[in-house]
Image (cartoon, rainbow, N blue to C red; front, side, top):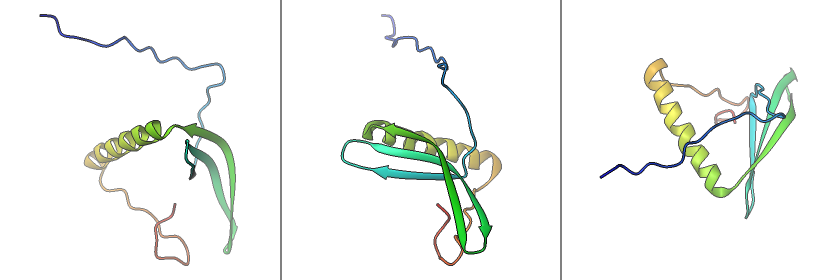
Length: 98
Protein backbone atom coordinates (compact mmCIF):
# COMPACT_ATOMS: atom_id res chain seq x y z
CA UNK A 1 0.00 0.00 0.00
CA UNK A 2 1.31 3.43 -0.97
CA UNK A 3 1.01 6.37 1.41
CA UNK A 4 -1.45 9.03 0.31
CA UNK A 5 0.13 12.40 -0.31
CA UNK A 6 -1.38 15.75 -1.15
CA UNK A 7 -0.61 18.01 -4.07
CA UNK A 8 2.78 19.65 -4.37
CA UNK A 9 2.56 23.28 -3.32
CA UNK A 10 4.68 25.93 -5.02
CA UNK A 11 4.98 29.30 -3.30
CA UNK A 12 5.78 32.14 -5.69
CA UNK A 13 5.91 35.86 -4.89
CA UNK A 14 3.62 37.85 -7.17
CA UNK A 15 4.70 41.06 -8.92
CA UNK A 16 3.12 43.23 -6.19
CA UNK A 17 4.70 41.29 -3.29
CA UNK A 18 6.52 43.45 -0.78
CA UNK A 19 8.01 43.17 2.67
CA UNK A 20 7.96 45.81 5.34
CA UNK A 21 8.51 46.36 9.05
CA UNK A 22 5.54 47.03 11.31
CA UNK A 23 5.55 47.95 14.98
CA UNK A 24 1.77 48.43 15.00
CA UNK A 25 -0.83 45.81 14.12
CA UNK A 26 -4.55 46.46 14.39
CA UNK A 27 -7.35 43.98 13.77
CA UNK A 28 -10.91 44.85 12.83
CA UNK A 29 -13.21 41.83 12.76
CA UNK A 30 -16.69 41.73 11.27
CA UNK A 31 -19.17 38.98 10.43
CA UNK A 32 -17.42 37.89 7.22
CA UNK A 33 -13.71 38.58 7.67
CA UNK A 34 -10.86 40.11 9.66
CA UNK A 35 -9.01 43.21 8.47
CA UNK A 36 -5.42 43.13 9.69
CA UNK A 37 -3.69 46.51 9.33
CA UNK A 38 0.05 46.98 9.60
CA UNK A 39 1.66 50.30 10.37
CA UNK A 40 4.49 52.25 11.91
CA UNK A 41 3.88 53.90 15.28
CA UNK A 42 5.96 56.89 16.30
CA UNK A 43 5.78 59.09 19.36
CA UNK A 44 6.88 62.66 18.81
CA UNK A 45 5.55 64.00 22.10
CA UNK A 46 4.98 62.30 25.47
CA UNK A 47 1.19 62.41 25.08
CA UNK A 48 0.69 61.64 21.37
CA UNK A 49 1.37 58.56 19.26
CA UNK A 50 1.03 58.68 15.48
CA UNK A 51 0.29 55.44 13.60
CA UNK A 52 0.74 55.44 9.84
CA UNK A 53 -0.81 52.30 8.33
CA UNK A 54 0.85 51.02 5.16
CA UNK A 55 -0.93 47.72 4.44
CA UNK A 56 -4.30 46.15 5.15
CA UNK A 57 -4.98 42.45 4.58
CA UNK A 58 -8.43 40.84 4.71
CA UNK A 59 -8.55 37.27 6.05
CA UNK A 60 -11.43 34.84 6.19
CA UNK A 61 -12.27 33.69 9.74
CA UNK A 62 -10.70 30.31 8.90
CA UNK A 63 -7.46 31.88 7.68
CA UNK A 64 -7.37 34.24 10.69
CA UNK A 65 -7.59 31.23 13.02
CA UNK A 66 -4.94 29.36 11.00
CA UNK A 67 -2.68 32.45 11.24
CA UNK A 68 -3.27 32.59 14.99
CA UNK A 69 -2.27 28.94 15.34
CA UNK A 70 0.86 29.45 13.20
CA UNK A 71 1.90 32.51 15.20
CA UNK A 72 1.38 30.71 18.52
CA UNK A 73 3.49 27.75 17.39
CA UNK A 74 6.25 29.96 16.02
CA UNK A 75 6.29 32.09 19.17
CA UNK A 76 6.51 28.93 21.29
CA UNK A 77 9.51 27.75 19.23
CA UNK A 78 11.14 31.20 19.33
CA UNK A 79 10.81 31.43 23.13
CA UNK A 80 12.13 27.88 23.56
CA UNK A 81 15.23 28.94 21.61
CA UNK A 82 15.76 32.57 22.68
CA UNK A 83 13.79 33.03 25.90
CA UNK A 84 10.46 34.57 26.84
CA UNK A 85 9.21 37.59 24.94
CA UNK A 86 8.18 40.38 27.32
CA UNK A 87 5.61 42.96 26.23
CA UNK A 88 6.09 46.62 27.11
CA UNK A 89 3.48 48.41 29.19
CA UNK A 90 1.46 51.13 27.52
CA UNK A 91 2.13 54.51 29.15
CA UNK A 92 -0.62 55.35 31.65
CA UNK A 93 -2.19 51.86 31.59
CA UNK A 94 -1.68 48.52 33.26
CA UNK A 95 -2.08 46.51 30.04
CA UNK A 96 0.54 45.47 27.47
CA UNK A 97 1.26 47.48 24.37
CA UNK A 98 -0.94 46.33 21.45
